[in-house]
Image (tube, rainbow, N blue to C red; front, side, top):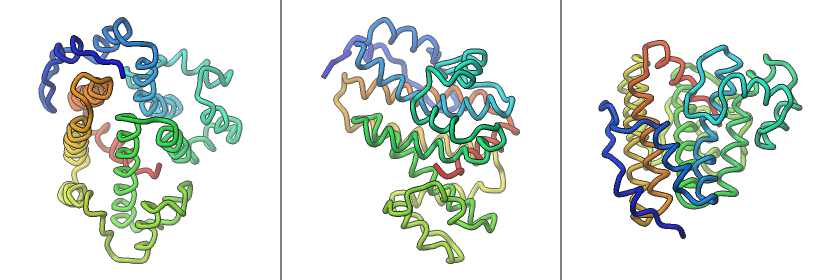
Length: 259
């Protein structure tokens, strides 16, 4: 395993609600020059979630997240010629031809992303995507109960034999959703803030930030996994500073979509 003591020793402390001393773009430039090629691919894997989010934003005419691998013009061309994209995205584009169809079935793209990352990644990347998937599933269950939606329909693109999904579906007729023990605090913050989208989204950022801190502690001090954890937290710190009320509502909706 490659070790990066110089890079990690130079990383500043980042905290939600405080402007970071280094921007994500600056970190990308630093890592492009100093990481081994194999580890640069891990950074790209971390950012694939942003790339998927940006595809949806592009179709909705919304600004793209700057941490994505392509700008709007590049993404438009890639979607048109179906190139420079992961194979599961190309399959999705060929399955659904119109923008309306693609947006209606967009949760299935998150499902494909998580399956890909959990199956073919290791270390922090694998742990991160498992965490993101489970958070989204718990939020999907909580939102469904809040809005009176059919849980089976909300999770229609998921693997119905997956234990985490099954734990949700067995409660489809229950009045309330009981989250797994490790996500009880996530349910608590949802219930406390569900009527205020901005407050809820900020609380979710803080929750995910701390979960990533906990994930990082599992890995060696100077490993690429620690750098990846820092990047994930830095993205959240920057997202916090860029939020407005409308974004808060939209992002809570996105986080609670199945996937």
